[in-house]
Length: 135
Image (cartoon, rainbow, N blue to C red):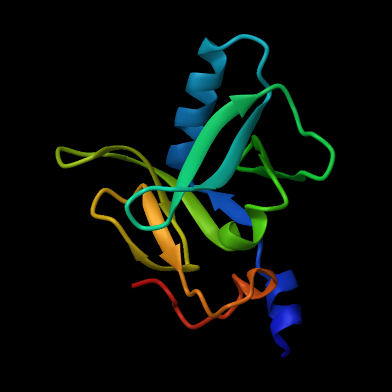
């Protein structure tokens, strides 16, 4: 199977039932929002950082999907870096909040909010390597 085929076969991202329940609870407390927007931005101690927020809807070019009953949108820049990622919600003594398990991250900071990808991998080939890239 070629890399392009593996990338296309890999879902953009998934949401665990725990994360979906928390997202739906938080969305119910907001007004005039209907989607979860997931993005990456430059910055953070490891190179990129995750952004999660609510929005009114998709804009032109966004990738749209439904995961565990949650409408999710991802901008075209962020999509290759998030392909195959899983959004989870952790509520324990050590940590409480959303966690993103990203197979494209080769390293991440201790708090898990920022990450780094392999600089030699072109953006259109991020995701789908299938080799358990995370460090």
